[in-house]
Amino acid sequence: MSADSAIDPEPVAVQPLSVDMRRLTRVGSRPNFLDYLVQLWDFRQFIFYDARARVQSGTRRDRLGSAWLLLNPIFNGLTYFLIFGLLLKTSKGVENFVGYLVVGIFIFQFSSGAITSGARSIRNNKSIVQAFNFPRAALPIGANVRELLSAVPLVLAMLLIVVVLPPAEEITWLWVLVVPAILLQSLFNLGVGLILARIISRVHDVTHLLPFAIRAWMYVSAIFYTYDRFVTHPQMLAAIKLNPLFNVIDIVRDCVLYARVPQWQSWAILVVWAFGALAVGMVYFWKGEESYGRG
Image 1: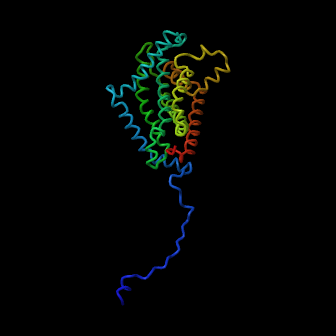
Image 2: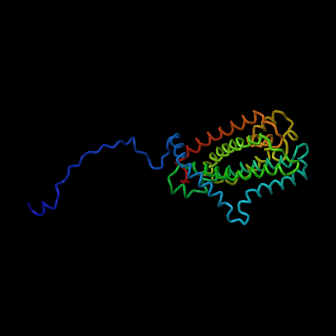
Image 3: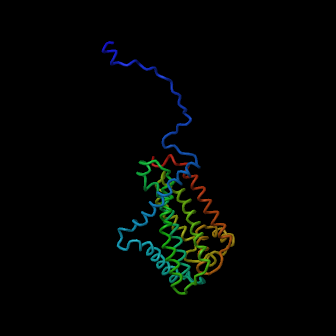
């Protein structure tokens, strides 16, 4: 046997290989909706621990730290009390106006922060979206979980203020109903945040309009006045009372301030808004999954 034949192996015949192209998926492609929900569930621990870490580090640079979570709504409440309660006299006819105002401000602060954070979550984390492959809805969900965790001391402080400041309210079993009301409010916040997150990821100008929209929403939510005093037309009053934020505030006020069971209509409106906004928001956000980070 020659040296050349010992070194060079015999050529191997190329065997045909069949590949099922139907099982191949494009990198970064949008999964079907149910698979997408499963992926989000798989990321649940990361979402929760990331949200908790951000809550703990959010005010670390401030001298008062996490105390600002309570001081911000308190200062807002004092400002609105001086302007609307004392100067404009919107407190007339309102039983326990201090508690009425405190509940409105604290509950509104929760929705305002959650919707704003969720709406900006994709745009503010564009580098992460471009670098890693994960369900993008994890970002607005994480932002809302973070705001929900931050709301726990807010709600406790709100209840403490209502009990301490005169006329002090008594603690009743109805206070337990505050928990489902806040959870329904959180679902609504998430749904709206998902919708706005997709819009802002494509049209950043909406970010500048968002504070004005939220401020206008605050003025029509009966936070420092009552609808019955300023709106007399019955049809207009009925339409205004469909406001989901007004309904959650009204439910909390009934439970905490007036010791009465909230009307079933308020619960029904809040449930429809919460689950409706969540369903629309999830589907709308999922449909734009492949576009995030490319604009």
